[in-house]
Amino acid sequence: MFKKNLTTRILPILAVAAVLFFTGCSKNKENTVMNDPQTPPASGNNDYETAMFAAGCFWHVEAVFTETPGVISTTVGYTGGTTENPTYKMVCTDKTGHAETVQVVFDPNRISYAQLLDVFWGLHDPTQLNRQGPDVGSQYRSVIFYYNEQQRQAALDSKAKLGASGKFSRLVVTQIVPAGDFYRAEEYHQQYYKKHGYTCAP
Image (cartoon, rainbow, N blue to C red; front, side, top):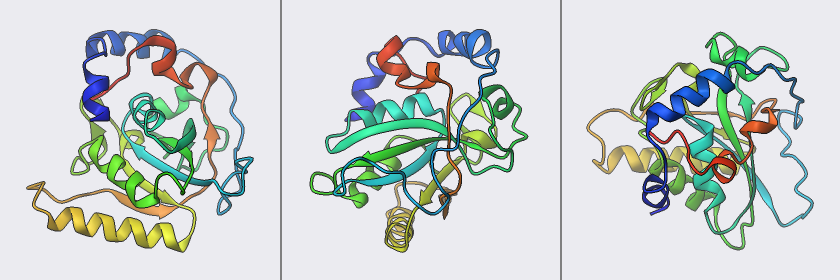
């Protein structure tokens, strides 16, 4: 439902590609580490929890989670790589190992982690390796970054359930790995849909 609503409001993919070329990879701003590898960032409320997902272009992923009831805040950035303080221009080279990622702070009293996983599976094709739609490269891979054993087990169970459902004829290739250093992306990437009214949806 969330994806359908967004799709009816986005501009053509060619326009997005032009934005990426002229503004995205031409920027070179510094980023900062948002959290210690195995510790979710402080949310300002002890009842809130943090999740982290990668599912292609982070503009689209963030837009979907932002409109999900129970989600308190979202931040786009880079994680899963080896280069410290990567910029968007560096990640665009597909040589840093990072994935375009969205960090999600949510209220577990309003939405469960399992329900967030359902949103995650529904917003992209988890059978595509290192690509979503026209976006190709390991930075667009499908990944669930877990912060604790409960999230890891929930992700494994959810992936197994999806694989056995028959929804896809191909293997689900989504990685399930521990959360590492998260580098906040440049400010012009944050809440891109709210700022510009469109995303790079596949």
